[in-house]
Image 1 (cartoon, rainbow over the protein chains, first blue to last red):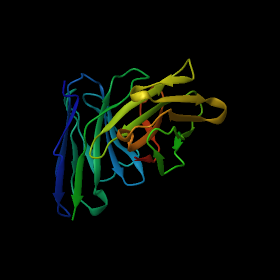
Image 2 (spheres, rainbow over the protein chains, first blue to last red):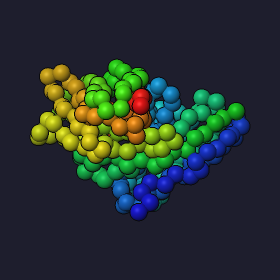
Image 3 (spheres, one colour):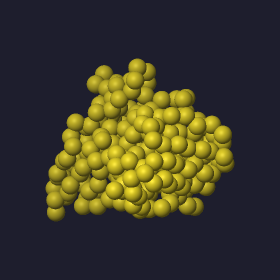
Length: 113
Length: 114
């Protein structure tokens, strides 16, 4: 059982480039999330989705976009990479009842130079 | 709005010593509370969770946490720390509905001295 899989694990981008961080889960979870983790700041929610075709902004959505065409996949897109987006990005998923924990991928470490 | 405070950024304990990591939350109703652990280069792994009922909850790896409503706290404890417990620990608060979003604390980095 793979759980939540994120690709790539590492990436270096130049300022202004774009890229998509991939996330897929095989647990049939309806809820999925994208976080960024910066040193000393904990995890901040970027976007989340409560099901295919439904997405909503989290705490820090500026500079990012998401889509959810299937239950399994929840890609995160950076359109114009900026140095402030250098971070570690985590994808998570959970069942859609009120007290279920989130399951996390191993993260994507992104540097923008 | 809900919030979580982990007042200790770094903690160092000797192997075999007891451990307590502090977590204080702010939330208007009964919260859902979680502790996660993150090893270097890894994602977050759930240690334990509290939703209702018994205020002392047991988790994996010998950890436990106690929910104290009067103090708005959910501290994590372990009676005897092992070197492999060295990691970063995150407390999180959530609520039912609205996508089950979580608010995380800033984390406590645990170092274990042999």
